[in-house]
Image 1 (cartoon, rainbow, N blue to C red):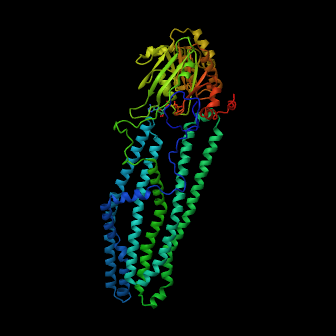
Image 2 (cartoon, protein in one colour; image 1 turned 90 degrees about the vertical axis):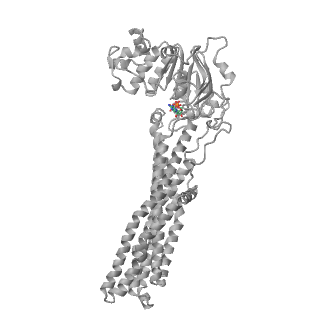
Image 3 (tube, helix red, strand yellow; image 1 turned 180 degrees about the horizontal axis):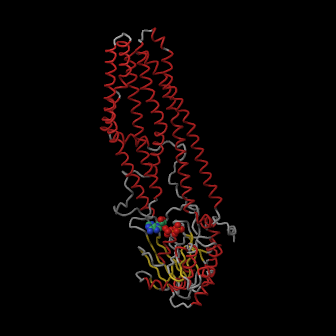
Length: 637
Ligand SMILES: Nc1ncnc2c1ncn2[C@@H]1O[C@H](COP(=O)(O)OP(=O)(O)OP(=O)(O)O)[C@@H](O)[C@H]1O
């Protein structure tokens, strides 16, 4: 029974703790960003990246000066061409001034290529740093969390690194472009006539102020929009990954409603972001268009005050070809890519630890992995209860088992002990990823523990051959193995001496008769590819039921069957002589078992269904996913 639609954290289970049971531990969200929080370290990180590349920035500035030459001289040269050339009837000097302007344009174009080269020297190392940070963060998280990286999270983060790279480069270009264009234009205007510069600078400043004042709100809503997109993605991915559980626990409507709500939230956030673009248009209108209007309106007044016609024309050129495009690029670049830069970098910094900060180490053993917290083992009274005094030997005895998937990984099973009496029926439940299948593999002798022992029928399973293990236990995994041969051959695989009557009886008992009839009887060929997952599970279940091994472990082996067919199979196994462990994915499996082992992080518990309902919040939470059971038993029962 795994927790549906809940992506559980990787936790190390041990079996049974004290009866008291605290509230379930909630995993902190991957990103704890609350909407409206100020950027975390984005400014600091950006300055650090810029300071670390000072020489590249100096080169960038140098080439930017050369690139800005046309912006600096255009109005001035045009004014000269008009005043000293064309208006005075002297075409050759007029054309010479324009020729000079063409020369500056060529110089500027040549410098633009160099600008991009210098830009790469600033942006690319920053991107590499972030990529390193993301990858090492994911590796550390994986080694802390049991060996598996969150592939979706890493893919998302690396995609975000590319977004930061692009937007960082874009931001540098537009801010730099605006600064050089604005300074060039203002210097040019001052050279033409200081009064013209004053007329242009006023509205330009107002437009800039409006834009800067609106930036915090834009950042907040952009962040909300990004977060909404991610929440929607996570929610949809979880729902997809858990669709089997969702259907099994009839939670479809609830999950659809949840995903719908996320879609609506993202749409609302996107609408707000779109509305805020109006603020950008306002600042562009004030800073870019108002100076033009002011100049045109003031033309007569300027000429009366002795400003030449060429100077007025030159001023218009400064505004329309220099200031206005640069301001538009700034407003659009900062309001679009710039906001994405802030929000995306902020998320990377939150999600991935700094690569310069080493992971915590044991001081005495510098190469030791991070310490894992001590975990409780089954207390003695609980262990004793499982074996009747003076009764037969234990069917399964697990002692102090510890297992991890890699030397640096956190243990999935730690100091785990458990004893099952012969004939006992145990259900193992817990959220997805809690370690149920790992435990099943360890008990079956398929995984080798780092420490501890497993005995089945008083026989240690460690270093046994496959044949010896097959005599001790049968493990039926979720993906049933069926091979191309007759149905009878498939069923006899673990018990070659079974006669047809035995096979027929097993088929009837496990509810597999309709399938056998449809296939054409025991002698009919079985083609695995044309069977459904449920049909393959039925065949594998009958085969396991026929085996003579004293222990059967069903690891979600009936998950593709409907509840009624599953009940038939499990009841057949429960009546079969021997011990049964069921990794359960429906509450009915837990209700049927003698005992239930709840694996969930640091507080695993062992008990029966009713007892666990009254004393385990985790168990109640798991049960709450299913609507096919009666409400929890009150604490007094
Ligand atoms: N081959 C593997 N390599 C590395 N880590 C693994 C491997 N198999 C499982 N894990 C990790 O071990 C932990 C326990 O996994 P396990 O499959 O035993 O959980 P489970 O409770 O059976 O989950 P589910 O109900 O989803 O099958 C998880 O964190 C999982 O990511």
